[in-house]
Image 1 (spheres, rainbow, N blue to C red):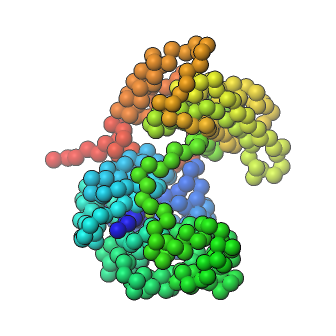
Image 2 (cartoon, rainbow, N blue to C red):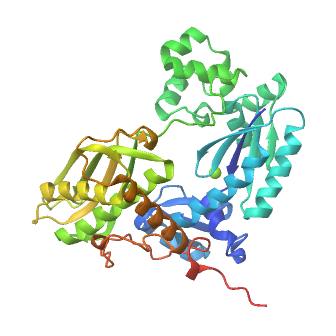
Image 3 (cartoon, protein in one colour):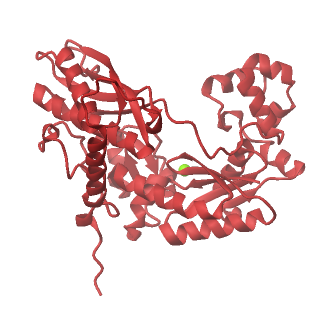
Length: 417
Ligand SMILES: [Mg+2]
């Protein structure tokens, strides 16, 4: 049996773990720079607060209803996600971590629903995060099942669809646009042919589905009929590129501030690469002005540098990003956004050393390992390159940021006895 474990209102739930007084109260989390609503507790959903709406349009609604508003705290969510996944791992026969708050797992053998219920209570007890679990013969149907688990209280968070009768009942009224992997365009196409539920899609002629929705649609149809096309995959292929980009809280004008921002983004990418045991072959950096400022002149530019030897070294990746900045920076503009992307990612075990390589790679990799260890113990960027600076004029607007309860010593909760 395939199951999907999906954390309920994940970011809002993370905020609540350390603020139990917020249980039963409306909570929302805002995107970078406190822009839009990206997570809502059930109470916030009930107030009619819509996903993706700008915070400033909701201010009145927030105030009248006493909504608890948070800036996004990805250090907290990332760490809570790791705890949830670590709790799942020993209980599942296979696991594919699908996103920050979802994992596909398999239960081989009998009593999968009992195992799922036990897992659900363990996750709640060990991490404080409520999850829903959907079980079915395929991933696509498991996604349907988890929908039911979330929507209906009688399921108590776990729902199985297995027999042909259960499958038909579950997909009979299930809208095609809510199916896993169906985009807006495919959904409207299907609807224009009178196919609006998942059951209608399973009954459509396969040749027709293939012609109109390509092979992806055909796989989806098979999965709805109970045939696995997308197995639970423990080694998800490596990402081809990693990116760190930010809109600045306020516009940035000087070269030094941009250098500090790009340097920090580059270190961020390098750290992610090392975490995955990867190296990159290219470094791209970009800067641009604020496209929403109509009266201003616009400028955006980017360059890519190919590296001699693939690397995950902070110093080399920062140097490449700054070299690009030197080429593309124009002093007459104010910048709203910048970013660094690393590409051509390869496992670090496959890196071929250059014949004329001037870098002592084994010493540098020891250095990076020490930096990672110190920073993971004492907080992000505790040890940093001088150019990363301390001012961070460019930093995000995060006026309602919660403490990093689990990843920063100074933010730990104090228990009074
Ligand atoms: Mg979720």
